[in-house]
Image (cartoon, rainbow, N blue to C red; front, side, top):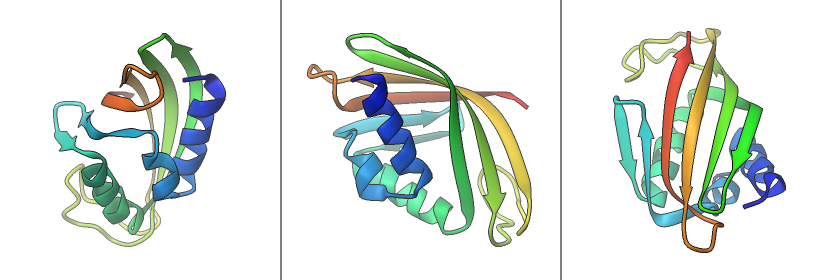
Length: 127
């Protein structure tokens, strides 16, 4: 995976282009959001983000990227803009108009081709 490939992935994610960003996932990808959520499979991740993006606009801005033959890492700032009230959101109640910004580090493991994500681990550290 090249930096350009990865930036295409982020651009598709930011545009809520579900087909575009999910093409980077292996069918059996595992996505772990800290210790709070584990999602299995490409379709599981797409389903999760379809629900989230119907209520929250999310923009990821890469601040640092590293690449190896079978992995990638991203340090990023993510801004969440709540579109509609979501009192039972699993990561904390949020109301329309809320704006939250966090910084995270994500670790991506790649398949043997180096082109598809097989395991993604994300951890927030600010705030």
